[in-house]
Length: 150
Image (cartoon, rainbow, N blue to C red; front, top):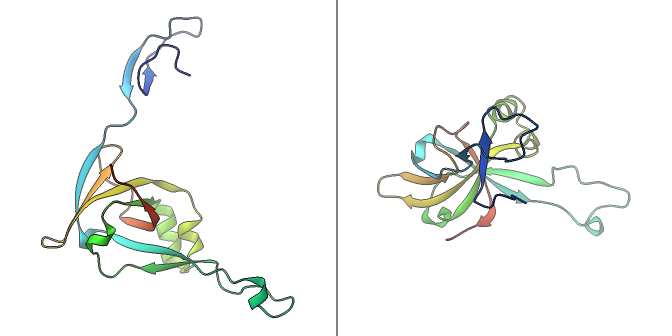
């Protein structure tokens, strides 16, 4: 839907609304960045589903546990390579630490996503591919089932 063609860019500048050319300075939306993060510098939680079928519950009973559980990842291994991780918002992390309710972490919006490019167990480092340079908003990351390999 970009009539000027070209890749994903954001038009920056003070063009007037009457301008029909749509020409402006283009700033790339994504500038991939490879961050090197020590294992000790991140907290990982794996999401798992614990939904029970209604046939397994007593008549008229509802499930008393949350349908999604968080399990802290204690040991980072090469199996994490190519995983897509959700970066939690700092406020969600703070709320989770106060309440201990898993939904405070996974049900809030995420700050973004990173891809685990490499896992170096000999140096205890993760190489995370981020869509832009800079610090991560938080170092609490959620691990799901999504993997991606270029």
